[in-house]
Image (spheres, rainbow, N blue to C red):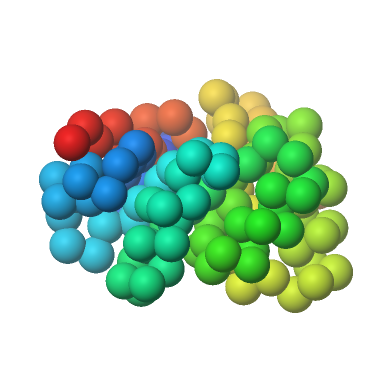
Length: 130
C-alpha cells in the first residue's frame, strides 16, 4: 500500500496546480495534482503532451474512466468511493493507482483490507499559485 503524507514516511509531495503557468513554480519532475473538470482539460492535455506525471481528483465513476484514459498516474477519490474505484481499476487493468483521501491513521487498516492501492493525507499536497 502506498502512503503519501504520513508522518512516519518521507514521500514525494503532490503539487496542486490550477493553471499551466503554475507548473513553472514546481520542481523538475514534480508530481502534479489537479481536480478533474472540463475547465481543466487544457491543463490535462498540456500535462499529457509534455509527459508530466499527474494525479487527478475525481468525484464520479465516469470521471475515474476519464482519468485513466487521460493518462493520470494516480486517481484520487474519497474514502467512500475507494472500493468501487479500485474494482474498476482492477477490472480494466488501469495503469493508474487509486489513492483514497484520508485524515487519520485509523483509516489505513480499513482501506488496506479493501485492497486500495494507497492513501493520501492532506499534508502531502502543496498548493502552487501562478
